Amino acid sequence: MLGGLWGIISTIIVGLILGVLGRLFAPGDQKIPIWLTIVVGIVAAFIGNWLAGVFGVRDTNGIDWIRHIFQIVAAVVGVIAASAIYARIKGGSRTNA
Image (cartoon, rainbow, N blue to C red):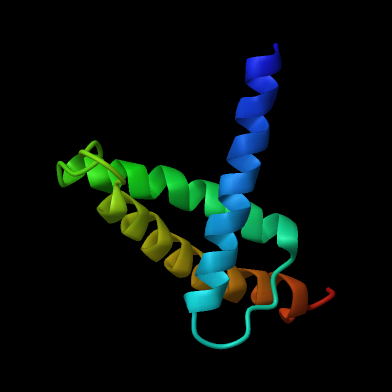
């Protein structure tokens, strides 16, 4: 049970770090809440790991720098997309019939 809890906590922490890095490197001002930043970071971690596997660089000797770069790039793209979608949902034009 404790291992599962630590797995969830570490996933959230990695998601937060990747989400913050995505916001840091994304151009412009992103008006998304912290929970969405974490979700984008978690998804970016999975996408980056998958891309690293596709390119055959997922498991290397030492630190997997290329995998981490894939994750950060996925986070940047995810933050840009989430920011655009979130802005449309929050401030979009809704017509009342």
